[in-house]
Length: 436
Image (cartoon, rainbow, N blue to C red; front, side, top):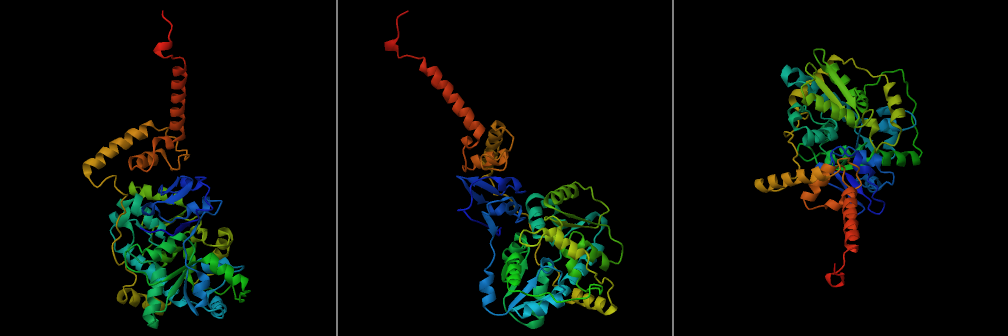
């Protein structure tokens, strides 16, 4: 499993703020420098928020280099248009960006998000009540979190492809072009979505650039926002996916019956909800939308605008939800004939690296780890460079740490040694002792 967080070792001061924010305990600070365990990282971006020294960043492609090579065919995330001084409708933005060598796949994006919502509604309706609720696969970070910590919920992930990748496939099918595509991404999770696709199939998108980098370049070039009539409803339904509840609203519009849906955002809320689903406490709910970022994708660390301002602009957009019969027929044909909406391969769980390849040795090390853990103070202070005492015990068993890495155990050792020195100070060699 790859991840999209890069480390600036020169900027890292070993402050351990990042390790406490990681939900999967993927970060260590050893010898004053940060290390990320790739197999445990879910690319939620929480560590980037916690790092005040900017020692952590996004492992994205070079936007200046991509832009310098001619026309950029770009897949815009729904977050993209709300990052400017005022909201851009896709049609208003497309012309302005085309003048600067950027062609947005807005038509394909609209078809892709509609198709994804349409397919999701059909899948939900065809499932029995004991197979519900199904869980959204739009947020790659949520999928990876389930793979690592909630494998029992893998069967509840809705088998519908991410609409951003569907848009790329639609564009290639319509244009017969193999020109490289670039995704404007709002978070590290969507960068990893392209570089390490969850289903295993290669992504149709070649390059990934943070929205922040693109927006800063465009604003510096003096690009202007065209005027538009805010009272005219927009057909850009995909814009709602950027905020919490947007996906569930879109899917509900395509359902033939009333759906019971739930939407949560924020990492802690998402983890709490997944735990509750695992315990079977959400019977009667049809679909659950989870976003690890607060307020939905607007909270992504790669989005430059305040998530509150972007959310405010987005929620005031008049969107046309009543489909014409022609549009409904188009979606039905795409759903039946293209099959682009289907996840190619089943999503598998991700196991932590075993303590040993030999079962007996692994069991012995597990027993040893429990014994070491029992000796530790259990306060999870992070001073050892690990997120918890349990992680510390595991690292010791893996020979990646020592018991004295714990400041409390080190203090105990120093105290014990000091007492031994004091007691030895009163002891004289036998030749110097006076007779009794």
